[in-house]
Each structure stands twice: as structure tokens, then as C-alpha cells.
Amino acid sequence: MIIGLLKETGSEKRVAMLPEIVSALIERKVEIFIEKDAGQRAYHSDEQYHRAGATLVSRQEILTKANVVIQIQPPEKELIESLNKEQIWISQYNPLWNTDLVETFQSKKITSFSLDSIPRITRAQAMDVLSSMATVSGYKAVLEAASLLPSFFPMFMTAAGTIRPANVLILGAGVAGLQAIAIARKLGAQVQVFDVRSAVKEEVMSLGARFVEVEGAREDAAAGGYAVEQTEDFKKRQQEAINEKAIKADVVIGTAQIPGKKAPVLIPNDIVEKMKPGSVIIDLAASTGGNCELSKDNEIVEHHGIRIVGQSNYPSQMPVDASKMFGKNLFNFITLMIDDEGQLQLDFEDEIVKGTCITRDSEIINERVKSVLANKNN
Image 1 (cartoon, helix red, strand yellow):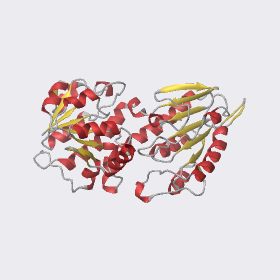
Image 2: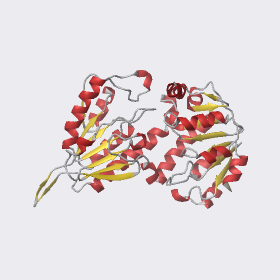
Image 3: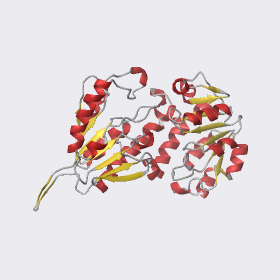
Image 4: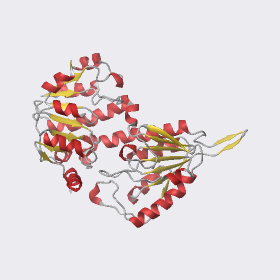
């Protein structure tokens, strides 16, 4: 079997596999084709891939000969047109949001896997790219906020007087939010956290942050640990609580998202205008609309002296370690799909393989994606 690794396009600097993962797959009797310069922006040369045992080829050769084609970002339309139904596509393409892409895969009868759909079960933790990349995002979000804030994060006792610590509000206590708490606390900030899931309260407090609790949140065990849509009454009380905290915050970090839906707007325009000049909002949900009403993905907006950073791909800014983490998750997933002779063996009785597969032949396999598309087309 041949696995073909494509070079990322646009602003993406990561690569789906570093040479160490190539070596590990070759030991499993898999042949690896690497598009030339695929690892260059992640600071890994073609020579390193060659020494690991990969064959350096053109993009066209991968698209012609590879059984499995891999990259991190969703494929562009012309790339999909170059695939054939005998090939398998693997990337992180957010099928609950990019439904048009799902329908394109379906119409071309291509078997596709989206790594952000790996089931949230214990056995799949070593394959969880969402958690790995959220760790990077939470870390980088705090560092950028600290660099943009016109004041210190920690308290300082100086001859010139006392500098109070920064007040940081984090919206959402998933992996990114928890990492942001840890880094903000290490930098000396006072941290408050909001999340609709009461189950995360203990984790938040164990990291030294205060949990902002609004009673009456709806939780769904079937959501796999993700947040779910709330009642209008709860949303109103939630918004009042967040407004009060945001106005007093020096930094707000938004990480709240609902799979398959637009991100909840938690910082509306009028609240931004009541925040202290010089305050910073980092919006990790910018690609799905943003937690701040004024956010624009991949842009910094300044409004009434408040800087709003819409950034949904911090992992690309840490391409070495982010690629390392992504590649290890990917390796653990791929090993489910190959036999002892290095041949492709798709076991759709395996809940991880089945849950991560989005399209196969002309069918949509993933039940959550199927449900989202059914609602979209009704």
C-alpha cells in the first residue's frame, strides 16, 4: 500500500507527518510518497524524509499512484477533482460545518475520513487531533494576549508601587480553555472561566481559576462531552453573567463552540464598547462565526480601543510540535487500517474507523454528519 502525503497550501505551515512517523509506517511495511518540500515550513527537509525511507515525488504522482492521500487542511475543489473513487482521503475537514465538501466527496464516491470526527472514547484518546491542536491553541492564545496587552499579567511589588495582576476571562473549558487557564495562571493572572458544562467545574478550580456558574444549563451525555444548545431563558441569564465579567476583564479568550453549528456570540458589540481601552479579546472560534460579534477570522480588529484577534489556526504558528502531535495521532489512527503485511484493511466493525469515516462510495457513513445534512436539506 502507498500512502501519499501532500504539501499544505495557503498559510498552513504544519505537515501531517514528520520523518519519525514515516519511519514508523515503513516499519509496518507501508510505502510512503512525500510531495517535495512538504515539510519545509515545519522545518523538516526533503533530505530528512529521504533518510527516513520516503520517496520524494510530485503532487501529480501522489494523486495518480497513492492508495491513501493525506494532508491536514480540507482539500480544495480542484484537488478533489484529481482523486478517484479507488483512493482514500484523510484530513481534518470539519464535516459538520463543511457540508458542501461532504456532498462533493459523496458525489464522487470517494471514501473520506475526517480526523476531527474520531469518537470521544478512551481507546481513541491517542488519535484525538482535536485535543492535541486545542492544547497548542490554548497555549498560544494566552501568549498572544500577553504580548498585546499594554500591561503586565502578574502582580508586581515595586519601588514605584504595586502592579495589579491582569484579569482574564476564558469562555469555554474544553482542552483549549483548560490549557489557557494553566498558562494564564503560570503568568500570574487572575482567571475566571465560564462553561455550560458543570462537569468541568472541578478541573477549572484545580488549575487555580474561578468557575462562573449559571444554574440551569442543559447537558447531553450523548454529545460526547461537547457543549449543546441551551434554552432561551438560560442564554439570557448566561449573557448577563458574561457581560458583567467581560466588562471588568483585561483579556477575554473565547473557545466556546458547538459542533456543526455557528459559534455562540457571547461578547456582543455593546459589551465590547464597555470594556476598558487596551483590553484584548482572543477568539479561537472565529472560523465558525466567533464568540465575539466583531471577530473576523485571521484578522485583528480594533474597536473603541479594544483589540479583537480572530485566530482559529494557532497550531500553524507552532508547526514543529503541532506537526509532531498531529502525526502521532495520525499514526495511531492509520495503524487501525493496515494489516501485518502493510496492506489496507478497513474494518467498519471498529467503532473508531466507522465513526471517523464520513463518506464511502456514494453514501454518508457518519450518523452525526448525516443528521446535519438532513436538517440542512429540509
